[in-house]
Figure (cartoon, rainbow, N blue to C red):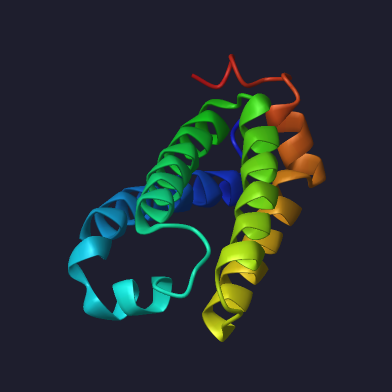
Length: 130
């Protein structure tokens, strides 16, 4: 079975956004606007840095897993999405940017559980595709 185009796009988007996320996380302490925004957060900057780095790595791992047809990758993505939204609701003020991010995550989750995704990530045909 050939990998669905939608999952190819999702996989690469997660890898690329994860890489940019690592870069952005590394630059957070040097950005005065970010440090000012996070000053009112109940979590310290170090916790935000750790969560950002872990989230970026999880995104890249999920993207790789989706490209390879590994079913656990979509469950990891959903699990981390739920955790990240909960942390954001607890520690950050609601912004339009957060809503846009959550909408994108909802679209990705929708694509990860469609019929073509179920066939690809359900263990049928993933190993044969390579």
